Image 1 (tube, rainbow, N blue to C red):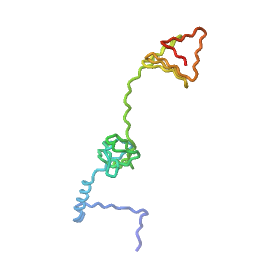
Image 2 (tube, helix red, strand yellow; image 1 turned 90 degrees about the vertical axis):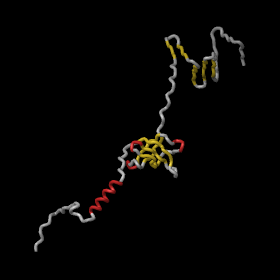
Image 3 (cartoon, one colour; image 1 turned 90 degrees about the horizontal axis):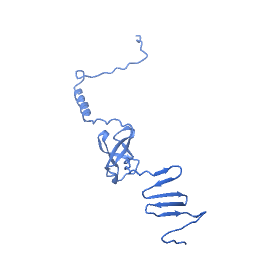
Image 4 (cartoon, rainbow, N blue to C red; image 1 turned 30 degrees about the horizontal axis):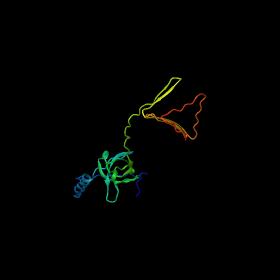
Length: 183
């Protein structure tokens, strides 16, 4: 008897069983599938990029535990690329995620607190009018160049420091003081 022509491609047929078509075990399989779906916790969403969390503590073996608020996760074991110690518990941390899994965090480091605002420094008052330069300060003015310095203090002291100090006058040079010490 001749063979019927076979198509060059094979077709795949999928069969779906319904309660009416299936044997008596199918309702039990449906219940099992339902139970597995209900008892399986939903997988957390994919973690893209870097997130912030809080160092919650340490496990008995010293592994860091972190809270990750964006994923509503608490005390998740985390590997760390930065040294951590118990004094840092409660500090915010930067977190990366292995394979984008929020349940596999990696502590990248501690978040730095913003620098405290410093009191504004008073501006230096400098007047330049072409004939005179006036510098005014509340405590001290120091002019420095290498090892040489002239320091003017608010209490009236003037210090001149240098390796060699030369004083030269074309006219009279006076030195006055309550007492004058030379050498």
